[in-house]
Length: 62
Image (cartoon, rainbow, N blue to C red; front, side, top):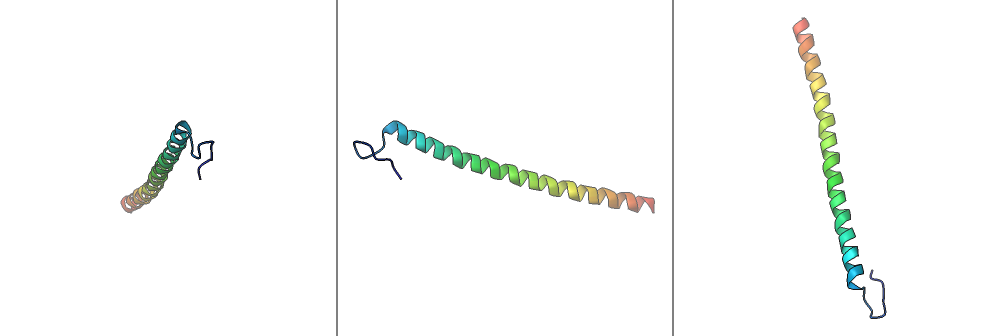
């Protein structure tokens, strides 16, 4: 998990960089989940709106 250095552990800068990158990946994954959920909800909303508008137009035509 940790790279061995002369003193047996990672230097502070390297550890902070790894922690920063780990937090960055977690944040990007969370953001990607939000975007995916929003796009799916948008897709469903557009589908239902087309269906409802079509039903209303057919109902008014009769």
